[in-house]
Amino acid sequence: MKTNLSSPLVADWLCRGRTLPLSQRVHVMGILNVTPDSFSDGGSFFDRSAAVDRALQMVEEGADIIDIGGESTRPGAGDVAPAEELERVVPVVEAVAAATGVAISIDTTKALVAKAALDAGAVIVNDISALRFDPAMAEVVASSGAGVVLMHMQGRPRTMQSNPTYTDVVEDVAAELSGWAGRALDAGIVGEQIVLDPGIGFGKTREHNLLLLKSLDRLTRLGYPVLVGASRKSFIGTTLDLPVGERVEGSAAVVAWAAAQGAAIVRVHDVRHMVRVVRMIDAIRKA
Ligand code: HH2
Image (tube, rainbow, N blue to C red; front, side, top):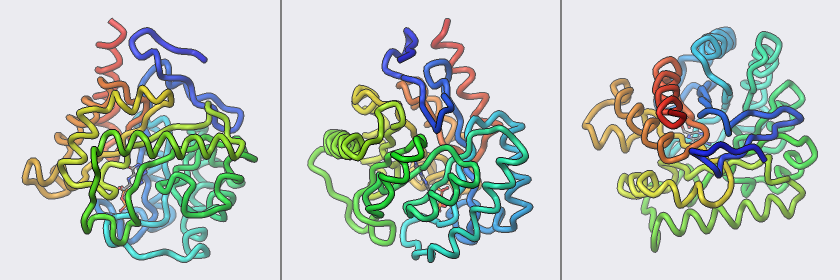
């Protein structure tokens, strides 16, 4: 395991025979929502060629990973049928893989969609249910050797914001993520494939999100790289009293905080700006 002195717990990430050097620098995951209804950019990249152009633009801006999703998980979102989700994402994965060498991640909870995206060139499965919604998902990840993001969520997207409750949000999230990582290992996934994510906004109040960020080191100490996805989310809007289109500075503050606390990957919409933020944090850490 390669580590660096300022972040000794960050290991590199094994993604289908490819290694992402998380021990060397914070990685930026650019969001590509091929959906009509995502909370901040719904509809903008629903058109296939617009989606591919946006992916190439994010690569140009310095994204290390492109995270392609075909189902909105915003609070209250409805389900998308597997066939519809496949139809949205697979051609985009294929086209992006053909056009660039960037690592592609598929944002899905469905094994069928993950498998098809991996066959089309993706190397990471980003599962907001941490392999819990589809019993076939663990096997898809284990047999492919894909990198996997295990995200914390309380409840289901449709109802998760109705009354999120924890005894101690930081300890509860740490314990659940640790348990779900253990289940992944039991299913034959190796530790180097696993990244953990506190799931900002997924069954959490504004206070829960702030506390998880404040104590992010509790999660980095679990021994897996940590991803933080806070970009443009509503706790930033409520803290600053700003609409979704004006949350870039608030998002940058969270990215800088998370990177300084040891997050290995940040999942963002505003790639150009956030690459600059993490490069600055990297420089400070390495000084
Ligand atoms: N957040 C969203 C979706 N996927 N995956 C991970 N690992 N972590 C996150 O925090 C996360 C995620 C929600 O954001 P977005 O994709 O912008 O919106 P929508 O779900 O409405 O498409």
